Figure: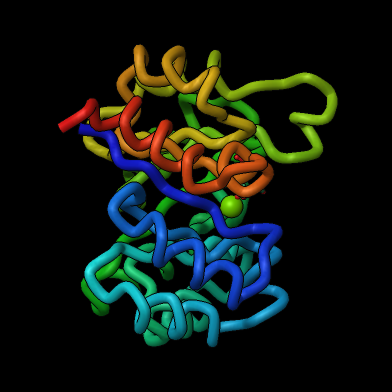
Length: 212
Ligand code: 5RP
Ligand code: MG
């Protein structure tokens, strides 16, 4: 069964905690989004984990260097997953993986802007990434790109890692992604930019988990 990951990007901390209280049964992984992390720092991880201790928390730090130090900081604050950019040095990815093993956490390798999807994904798996994510960034979305084709390609080449997909996914497009059987569906604006965020989260969660 795929998981729904809510990316807390453009939202204030108190607002986010209120929203999470209302949608706690309709989200599996709570992402401390990159802009949210920039605004509130590691305290955001602590506050979210304290409020919803049974939920998995992912820190979207998009680690690019100093993998050991940065991953450890995020895990120590309570993250269950950290993200590392697949385009970075292999040493950085390996350091994040080592930190994850020591903290009982996981590493998601974000393939944003990576050239050669299949080769990069295999390298991420060989380095021990637990999850490999195809990701069409916000700026790529603005010129009409989506991660659907990348997800289809990734599913063909990944062997043991879990597969995640992100990039502008909404309630009216999620079915096309689900047909490709990702393990994690990441949604930011598809919930946070909707007029009724609670109902958007419920709709997406039901699409992913069925009505059970
Ligand atoms: C941008 C991100 C976002 O969290 C990710 O793209 C999900 O948000 P959205 O569904 O709005 O695209 O990491 O770099
Ligand atoms: Mg994100």
